[in-house]
Length: 630
Image 1 (cartoon, rainbow, N blue to C red):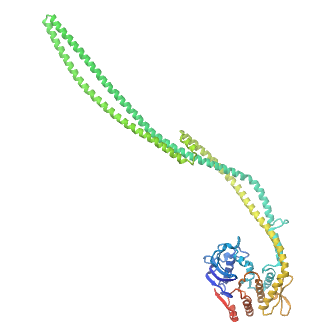
Image 2: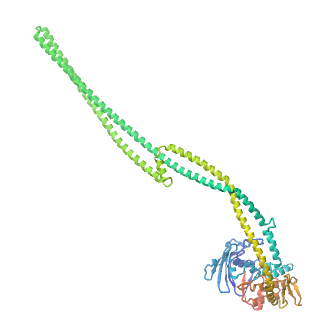
Image 3: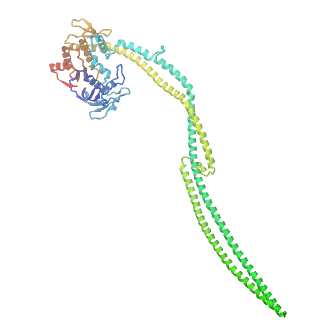
């Protein structure tokens, strides 16, 4: 496998950088604090992601390498496997999972295993090397090599651990003790009382007792919710009915006003009819009175005429029977006077009759005109009243139908029809308003009951949630305990197997490497019964590795890591060394670079350095290399 390109958008102090790496040796040169270690961490982050947990560090890696300028926290890496397959990985470090493309730029991210905690495990699936193994073998971080003399013992111990377990910080002699201690402290046993599993078990029993005491409140909650829902539905129904009644009331009141207007018109028509009738009666009475008067006058005239005839006849008889001239003269005079009086009286009467008749005719004409006016007014008003009545009836029916259609689907049709026929609207509205008020009081009371029970239910919910969490924790502790027991068994088996098979092969490879890089000074490396590293001195004596110089220990440590890296993966992974040769003198450096070129020439080697020593030695040895300046 080899890394082809690195594109850094923003990562720690690095920004907008693109780096191309080649086969063989690549030197990443930069002065101190130029970003070499940041670049190495970028490579690790692209393959394995950045942890947001401290993991024993002061600052989590994710926080530590968040861009300083607040830019896009992302980048891309291109690499090629031994099979020739090429891949590009783009990672936004704010997200858990990267996007993986094949050489056809197809997104194949879902074709790899996904871990809920660490994310996509594409690099492990391709190489079978996890981050811990990567860091303990082919990748040497700067802080692991800058050691003083006081740290020699610790480094030797790390080498022993690496040789016996494959991890430089794990020792078989201590791991079982640590696992036992961890079981006691982190889990607990039946004999402990204050350990996590004991505390959880006790709390689970307490929660069960509390849940039983609160169970009745849960049932009561359902009753309250059901009652509350029923009352709310009843209030909604009543409010709809009340709204319908109010609209119906307004409709009836408006209709009543229109009917009253029609009633006023009808009363007016009756008044017109009454007046016409009175005028007709008055006219008839006047005609009758005139007729009576005429009859009376004619009768009087007849009497006067009869009286005049009688007086004339009497006078004539008197003239012929009485021979007295005086009496005759008196009779003639009386006759003449009577005739004059009678004539004058008839003349005056005739004049008066003419005047009375004229006056009567005027009065009759006035009454007729008034009757005609009233009759026309009555007819017009009657017509208007009939139109208004028909319009009122039509509009009332339309509005009733509109109300019916408006509330269909909200109120049952039967109820709507019954309400539309009601006449006691005001009473029904009052009754309905009182019922709504009563129901709202009941609803408020129900809400109070609910408010009172909510804290208890919340407590029950919290208890149930806590119970589930504790059950999960208990299961995790139980599984963890089983896993630790299984790990202890497997470690013991592996330990025995390694002592018989793996360690001899490993120490043989290590001995060959240290012989080459030390120019034959040290030829044999072994581990004693206590898994302490011992090395054969030039005089044949075995000495403890802790007694060697820092440079020799570094040389030995690197040899050990390279030996461990030989068979760790299906891929020949790049060897990445960050300031690894800080304690190497020029001779050791030359031997090591020569050895790396000869033995690992088929691998990509990436050297991070702040000096020109590596370049000078490679130039001296005539070894080609690629330089990248930061």
